[in-house]
Length: 125
Image: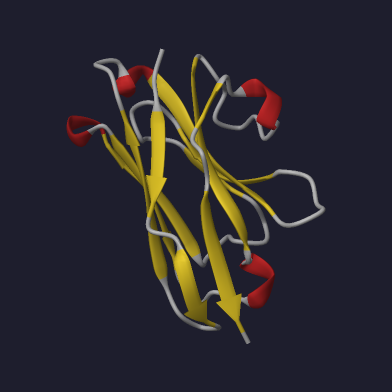
């Protein structure tokens, strides 16, 4: 089992940047497919990006492609989401998720068994 803790959220103006981190406990982080999801008030939780256990495969939602970059450092048990050119519609609570054996091309939140508590990202216009 792994415990996940997000950090790095905050308020930024449109066009700005933020870097989210997801710190994982345990010694098997390098075995987990990891993903980022986001949920706006009153909306469903949506896929943002995913990265394979080795970091060799990444997938992005069309809405963030070219603006967001997912990465991981298995030696530090940490995953990152670099968010550039932020837009007001990126405002949401961002969650990191993980699972062993999850296909990084699988965008369904239900495929991930482990979740962080979320971090708020607010983009003002």
